[in-house]
Structures are given as C-alpha cells and as structure tokens.
Amino acid sequence: MLLTISGLTKRYPTGDLALSSVDLAVPKGQVMALIGPSGAGKSTLIRCVNRLVEPSAGSIMLDGTELTKLGAGALRRARRRMGMIFQEYALVERLSVMENVLSGRLGYVGFWSSWFRRFPRKDVEEAFRLLHRVGLEHMVDKRADALSGGQRQRVGIVRALMQGPQLLLVDEPTASLDPKTSRQIMRLILELCEERGLAAIINIHDVALAQQFARRIVGLRAGQIVFDGPATELTAEVLTTIYGEEDWSSTIRAVGEDDDEAVAA
Amino acid sequence: MSATAFDAAAAARRWRPPPLIASPMLRYAVYLSALAYALLAMGSIEVNWARASEGVERGLRFVLGFFPPDFTSKRQDIVEGLLESLTMTVVSTVIGVALSIPVAVGAARNLAPLPIYLFCRAIIALSRTFQEIIIAIVFVAMFGFGPLAGMLTLAFATIGFMAKLIAEDIEDIAEEQAEAIRATGASWFQLLAWGILPQVRPRLIGLSAYRLDINFRESAVLGLVGAGGIGDTLNTAFDRYEFDTAAAVLLIIIAIVLVAEYSSSWLRRKVQ
Image: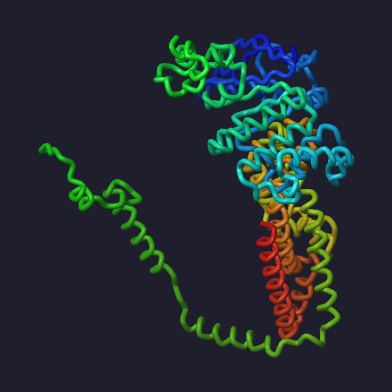
C-alpha cells in the first residue's frame, strides 16, 4: 500500500467532528474518487494527509513514513512526495506561469536560489516538458491571472507534478470549470497518473464524472466512510446512503449503459 | 384573486426608506438638541470686530513681506537645508520600510503566533500613538539638534504606518495561494517570498512611495523643533524676519511636494 490511513479523526477547535475514525488504503498507482455531500469531510481528509490540517487522532502512513508524527523539516520533505491540486487552482496570481510551475520545486531548493529564481536547469527543462505536455508551453511568461480557468488548472496540475510526487491529492478539480473543460481536466489528470504511475485521491461532487473516470469510489458521509467499491457498484441505494434520499435514476444512467443490473438493483 | 390579494402598488406608495434613527421621539429630540447646542455655542463666541480689522491689516503686511520671494541671498542655507531634508527623507524611508516588514509579518494574525502578534501590534501602537513632533522632541533631547534626530523620528513613524497597513494586507491575502505553496514542501521563508510577497508587493511599493512623500513633508515640519532639514532653514528665516527667504523656502517645499505627490501616485497606478 502506498497510503494507509487508519483511525483518522479530526475535530476542529469549534467542536465540529469532521472525520471520525476513517480507515482507507490506497495502493500504488490507483486513482480513487472520494465523493460525498458538502461538509462530509472530503477536503479535511486530503488536507490531513499532507497536514495542511492537523489530524486530531489516527495514523497516516505514506510509503513507510508515519506522517502524523513528523517534525517541521521532515514534514516538508514528506510534502514533496504529495502533489496537491486545488478547486480554485490556487495559483499565485501575480506570479508568471513558469514561476508557479517552478514553485512545485520549492521543497528541493534553498531559500536564496528560490528568491533569485535560480532553479537547476533540469527542473526548468522538466517544467517546459510538462507545460508542453498540457499545451501551455507558449504561455510561460504570462501572469497566472491572465489565463482561463482550464488553463489555470493545467498549470496547477503541472505544479503538482513538478514535485515528483507519488500521490496526488486533488480537491474538487472541476468545481470551477464548465462541463467540457471539466472532462478534459479529469482526463488529463487520469492520463498523467497513468503515465507516471501515480496514485490519486480525487475529491469530487459530480457523481457522473467520478463514475466516468475513477474505477474505485469511496463515499464519505458526515466524516465516515459509507461506501468503498468499484464505480460499477454505485447504485441508487448507495447514493442514497451517501447523499440522502433523491431520485438518482438520471445521475447513474451512464453506468446503466454497460451494467443494467446495477441500476435495476 | 382572493380578497386578501397582495396590492404591490399600495405597498409601494406607503413605503419610505427607513430613517437613520427609528424612534421618531428620539429622532426629533436629537435634531432639536443639536440645533439648540449650535445656537448656544454661537452665542458664546465673542468677536472683537475692531481687533479683527486691525489683525487683517497686520496679516496683509505679513503676507506682503513674502513678496518678492528671495531665492538668492540665503542660497547656501536653502540648498543645504534642502539636501539635508532629502537625505533625511530617503534614509528614514529606506530604514523605516526595511524595519516595518518584519514587524508587519509579526503583526499579521494569520502568520504569527499570539505572543509575537501582540508584541508587534504594541510596537505599531506605540509608533502611531505619538505625533511626529512629540517623538522628534524626545529624539532631539536624546541625540541633540540636527538631522539625526529627524531621521530617527521619521524612521520610527514609518514603521508604525507601514507595518500596520502591510499587516492588514497580509491578513487579507488569498489564503489558498499560500496554502498551495505550503503544500509543495516550501519552508516558512519560501512561503513568505512565494506565497505572501507577490500578493502584497503592489501595496508595499505603493505605500513606500506614499510614505516617502509624507516623510518629506514631515521633514519640513520637524525643523521647527530643531530636528534639522529644510524646516530648520525655514524656522531661522522666520526668526530673522526674512520673510522673502521664507517665501522662497515655502515655494520650494510646495514644488517638491507636488512632484513627490505626482510621481508617487503615478507609481502606485503603475504597480496595481
């Protein structure tokens, strides 16, 4: 297993219990979608993994490293192995595309090299290679806020990949994008994970997108995992357990096409 | 339609924007007492019209003493005072801004732990409480007459001004941009340089330019308490009843303030 989460609990200082004893294991190279209603704890879960949010209890093992016990320096080194992709892209808007991409290497270079933007030649080369891969090599010196939503998210993806991660933590990558761009972005993330053998946890509220792109789906409700299985087993009953009572027939039609049983069940 | 149908037209006729003070009693009481106070206050002012007319004439003579402005006879003093003021302004702004940055970081609640936050807020409060003149008097007492006291005063005032406004800007940053930088494994200083600085840089540059302009104006005033600069020259000119020289100094100050004002606002527009 690349990532093993056990007994993960997060209680915010306000008293809200965001996660309650969550167990989850992600093998190397697996892309997994995490679905659930707003406030179910999806964001908190992936932020506990790279400790942007401090877990209250439980253990998180990444490839043999216990993340919850790390000191500041070791945590920085561990974070390099986890790339993060954000809902609102979270690019530093006043920096150029290239600077945003190179910021993925901050964990590897010293302060003054980063201050003077002196990154190793091979990092810059990798940046160009990845920007070319996502079709943005002509945008390197544009300011990030001059880009469209889809372009920004591609820069966000490249920044995460620059870290040379083993795991991608993806937080609602398509929530700010139109349906077509959403699909392109999801496809791109999937392709890149495949090319590089990366595992990914993708938070997403669009159930149809989750089913279309991820083979494994985990459903979170009120801080607890209520479903963990292949996308094909995502039935109306399962969606009701995750989200509550609703007419799900149109949402899961996409699956129904190649698995009528699932819909009928 | 039922008998209780909603009549939008009637509601619109009846509707008035709600007054500032809801209770009509209180409202009129406030208005009346304000009016009464104004009338009583005006009645208590004693205007000695004879003294005033005399004063107008004296004032006129004083103003006429300014013409024509004399740039030449005290040329040496003016140039010296001016250079001193400009040096004071630039040095104090550079030092003040440099020192204000760590204070601003410490005074931003989203970056600093509580003890450091309170300490830096205390520095800011201290620097902002006292008017420049009062600080200048203290520094003149400590370091003697001359531009050193003026420079220290301006640097100290700059710290409070810059640190407060930059700290507020840091607290207003887009948090997720900083979060993204942290997620890459960046160190704390890298977070400042990559996640925070790009977001506050336009404000930092704009405020520094603005502060430069304020510091020049202040430097002209600080001379009055012996803290050096063009204010000293101006003060001396008044003491010697050389109003024509004083007029020349005032014109130069106005010209420089205009130039500083214009260029700092141009710069601020540029960096937005």
